[in-house]
Amino acid sequence: MRRYIMKKVISLALLTAFLSLGVTAQVEYEIKNENHKKEVVQLTPHIYRVTFTNADGEIVQTGQYFERNQKMLPHGVWKLFAPETGHVLTKAKYKKGKQLWVETIIDGKLVKVYNEFIASIDR
Image 1: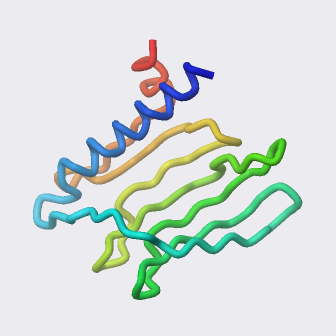
Image 2: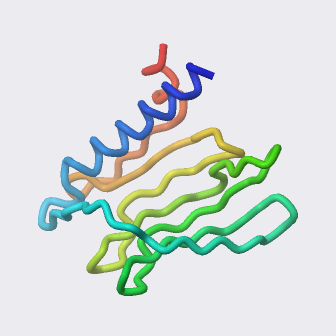
């Protein structure tokens, strides 16, 4: 359990580091901690679509959950959107709670980090 928590903390730290470097060379985004409306829709008996919107009704994040043992695990491709343009800033793929990869744009270049790299940081 401790290893799982550490892996999630490191994954979140990596994602935060990527975002803090700036999304593109021309544009910098200020990330604010806002309360977002969360809409969850059941697609199948175990898969749910989730959409987060800001106070203006703009979609800021999308993803899916997989329900296992009454726990909602991230599943499928999650996307984080730029507040003004709606362009995808960061994508991450999960399989029943396990992060497979994360990608974002840094200085105009696509950077993708795979689970093997994320797992090697945990060791």
